[in-house]
Structures are given as structure tokens and as C-alpha cells.
Image 1 (spheres, rainbow, N blue to C red):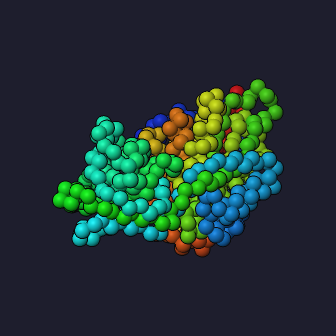
Image 2 (image 1 turned 90 degrees about the horizontal axis):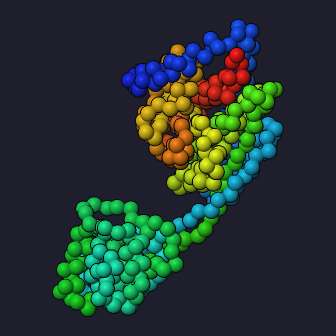
Image 3 (image 1 turned 60 degrees about the horizontal axis):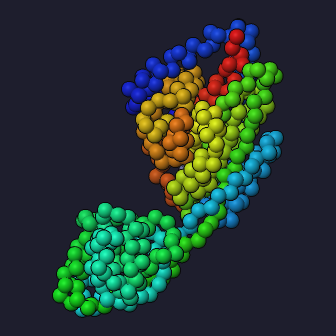
Length: 447
Ligand SMILES: [Zn+2]
């Protein structure tokens, strides 16, 4: 991993030009302070323990840790226990989410219709079995339906203009007992009704061709009856958790404290069927290790170490976390270092990703640290597939640390402990630790 940075030279140069002013910070120190600081830095970096990260990954990655399951609960308890053993009083923050089980059976039959159909389920579709006349209800806008009575009927609805959910609720309000949606362009889509709703009736999604053929069919046979069957679909409220360990400023001179907050984060949940050693027990273990080594050292800035739940279901834990922050807290958070997939033997080199593809405080600090440690700045590019996104959207400088390209075991049962590289864990943790120390200690030693 070290010394392997060429690909994103342009971004790196841009980043470098931005970090130049920061890189001169050492000149603000007196030589004595500089010496002390250098010693502390070296000591902290040396105390980072790849074996301890590896062992924590091993403990976490015994099973998949899907959000809202007992396995996630066990991971949350383990993480809290580790934080607390380092001297923190970690908080467990619960949040609810909609857990949807897709149907195991989807059936659609239409009288005298001989074309073979391949109906698809929409996310949040409800189970049920209904039989009724098929009616072409157009786009399902309120104005399309004014003159229609859909009582006991199955509405045939084209995709477009308004959401599937709005269409569904509009026809259900007119008495429809089932819905057949069809695409408005060639190809398949993953349809979603957006969220569970008690006003939903059973529904399926057809392709554009299937839908248009169906329209011709009901023109020919206006009273054609359809049977629609959805079995096994289930929407439930479920609960996932974030784990938060906070290190308050602890410099001896109160006046040196900043009001800033730095957040170091990862996600502890995994996808179903994958033990998620790299995704993201690696980032979780690294967050724990940083919390461990940073505990004793004086910092003038608050540091929050957080592992999020339900990242794999759509960044739910981090979204909840950022949403519940006060405006004041959001303005105090100056950086989010997000660690997701930071230890695979079989992935490429370390890269930073920002939502806007621009440098920010996090990339600058990380490039400064990687230059100090490895002689080259870690490059960055654009990416928005992890928990740094809600922070960035709230205006907080945020970046993802990840190896690129990803390993072939991504989201697979093979994402297990034997694929983890202690060297990569060591390398990334050194870069992040040095970057965080520079941000949370630097002024303390300034004149
Ligand atoms: Zn991940």
C-alpha cells in the first residue's frame, strides 16, 4: 500500500497546493515543544496495534450483522464493551427503520390473456389476493381519475409524472382493490412504493411491452377479469443502533480548548449472508483502536468515535445521527473521517472519497499525514456510498477512507477474517491517527 500513488496525480497535486499553508505548522512551535510533540506522535503511532484490530475484526466477523437482528445487537454490545474497557462511557443510540420482506410468491392472471407475464414486486407492496376487472387508469393522477369509479377493480397504471406511491393511494381512494403498474420505458427497474402505508393494496410491476399489450387486451375485452396474488410480503418496524464514544477536550489549560468536534466513524452492520470482515468490521475495529490510543493523550478538540447501524440499508444510522444533531453541534463538527473497507488483502490502494470530488479539511489532513508517513499524499476521487454522505450534505467536511478497487469478496460470504491484511490496517490507522492528532492537538503546542 505504501508508495503506490500515481493514478490520481492531478487530484493529489490540487490537494497538495491546498495543504501547503497547513504543512508549515511546525514552524509555529518552539523547538522544545516540537520535540515533545514529535515524541508523543511517535509514541501514539507505535502504540497502534494491528493485532488488536485484527482480533476485533475476528470477533465481529463470526457472523453476518444485519441491521435489526440479534447479531447486530451482539456486535453493538461488543463494541460498547470495548469502548468502555478503554475508559469511555459509550452511548448506544437506537433508531427505528422500516424492514421490508419481499414476497415469495407473485401471481398475475388475466382472462383470455395468452402472453406470458413476468410480474415483479415493488418494495413495500402488501400481500393479498384480489380478483377484479382491469381498468386502464392512465397515469393515476387525481385529474385522470375524476370520472372513474374503481370500486372492486384492478387499476392498470403507467409509470411516470408522479410516484408509484401517489398513484397507488389515488386509485385506492377511488376504490381499487389491486394495482398493475407498468414501466414507461424499455427494460426492468426496481420499483418501490417508498415506504409502508396502510392505504396500499396488492400491486405488481410489468415491463412497458407487457403493459402496452395489456392495454390492447382490455380494449378488446373491456370486462376482462384479473387475479392478483402477493404472498409473503411483510413490512415491520425494526430497530438498529449507533454506538458513540466521546472524548472531551482534556488539555491542562482550559483556554486552549476549541469548541470543535472531530467525528471518526465506521459501520458495524453487514449485508445478509456476508460476515463483513472488511465491510465493515475493519473500519469498526479501526475506530475502536483509534479510540483506544487517543484516550490518554491531551487534545484540545472533542473527538467522537461512532459506529453506525443500518449503513447497508441506505446509510440509515448516519442519517439518523446527523438529523438528531442540533444546528450548533453541526456547526461545531469540523471533520468526519469515515472508515469503510480499510483492511482487505485483495483490494487496491487507499483512496479518499468526497461527495463533491473536491478537497476539504479531511483530505488535506490525510494527505499531509500520508506524505509525512509514506512520502506521497493519498489521492482522492468522488464517491458517495458510505456514511460520510449525511455529514457532507449537512455541510461538514467529510471523506471516506477505502481501498480501491474493491476486493472480489465485496458483499459475499467470502468476506471473512482470512482476507484481512494487518499491514493495510496498520497503514490506514497511522494515516488517520496522525491526521486526527494534527487537527485535535496542533494549536495546543502553538505559541
Ligand atoms: Zn460498507
